[in-house]
Image: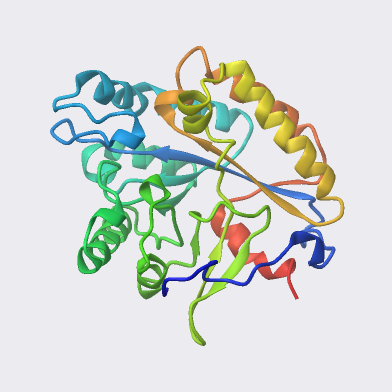
Length: 291
């Protein structure tokens, strides 16, 4: 991708697009993205992620480790109760450090996206060759541990460089979730031979943003999920929509927050014409909505 004033895709107002639902008749595709992340105790938690102190930053690290020891299994139980498959944004170092979590995801037939090696290291802090190596190692590690190809990618902190999309295509990644600028998936054509699908992730219906930035209570976050759904489901009668719920086990997996997610999912799944999908399923259906 070359530097650009607008983006690596044309501007496309949603009101000018075809009036179509998903092929299965759904108004809305719902995907739930647990971010399962690894922070090493001897590396600084990035300042933009709430850290920035000297190592060992025991409190910031331990809060996140709680998510991998306890919170993720609490989150899995709620999604199991609602028969919702997760699409995991997975730091590949989880495969080596906490394989029990990866096994639990595979037992549930959850999809695994690449999400860098660690959430302590962001792509845009490295040289072009180092970025490519990080992407390759991340994908190779997940494939080695799961035996399954990796179709999708969410950059740690949603940080890309001008090289990221090309590098993802070079390694066979079919969709990327970093571009939170739409309510429908769309193709990003990099050249005459290569393209990658943008599948909408969540910039706002995201527990990291809600709790750490906006200081929501658990009930306020649940209310926001329901309000987001109600509007997108209503609009989806005309043009199909995607809704993402982005979650971090150390946040939503806290005992005083988890029930807010359970109630929100109960509200969503009481509606007809909702398609509980994975990222790769949404990416594969993208051209159902476009000419």
